[in-house]
Image 1 (cartoon, rainbow, N blue to C red):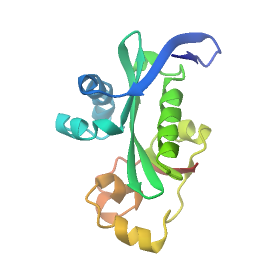
Image 2: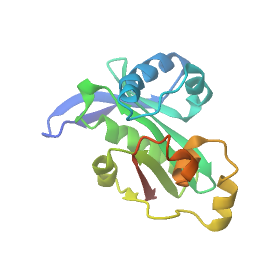
Image 3: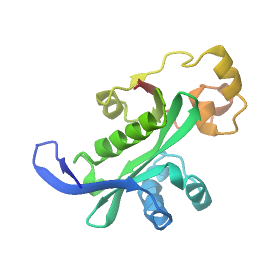
Length: 177
């Protein structure tokens, strides 16, 4: 278990971050639903969560899922942090930071050297070493290969014109590990 402290430094909860299992999908969807309604995160069908379940980690307090996040590999040395969400009751208590740290550890374990995110929470990700992406973040040959992906997150990473009308208006950020 990991003790997580609040912004004031007081210990607030014992958080366990673990790989997600199928029974967590309902809780993940409930964490994401209000954020998707506010257009902070992209809404997904249940099947999409099951298909990408192995990418997810969850934060659990007293046997309740209070946060989630996923690491989606995009290329040999590039992955994206997706669907990072924390319940309103646990915001500001370090749960998001613990989840992000676990996802970055997963990236390192996979041999990933750079992690991308598409976010409105630029201050949060900035505190964790992410920087705003200016221009292209990959070499031309990798860019050409990534153009073949059907994944909308890849298209957003590449900053393609075709996805701009559909994006939420968030910022592309990158961290080198």
